[in-house]
Amino acid sequence: MKKILLILTVLFSINTAFAQNDITFNICEIQSELKEGKKQGKYNSLTISKEKLLACLEININKKEYKISSFSFGIATEKDYIEINTLDNKINEKMINLIKEHKVDRVYIEKIIVENKSGEKSSAGFLTLHLK
Image (cartoon, rainbow, N blue to C red; front, top):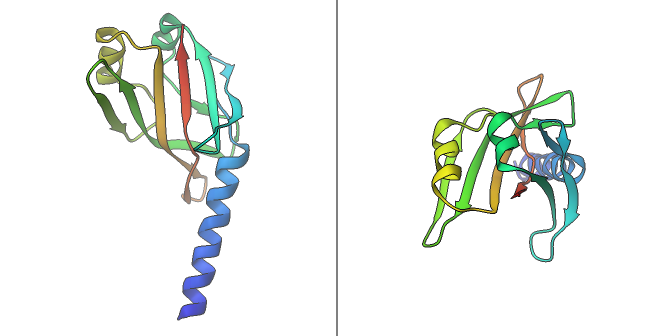
């Protein structure tokens, strides 16, 4: 039993490590850059105008064999951190309204889960959108 648990743990770790090390994202065909953070390790960063982001509401992945199955959208307002979860790769109406209502220069796309054609899911890290 311990061996099975150990094997499953190792397999999950490898799968997660793969997903976080070489996946990048794009919005409106603008490719994210993989960067090294001081505290959080590797992350993706993408600079885009608010207008372009609101025109192209879909987040895609550079791996053709994977698709984004869910993510968390977050913004830091003057008083709070607001987070919305979604079960696809699209920025929805609630998220659009948050961008329009608050003066934000960053959007945090976190808890990104990708799914392969076999239905296996893994974590893909996070993406910081720098709005200009």
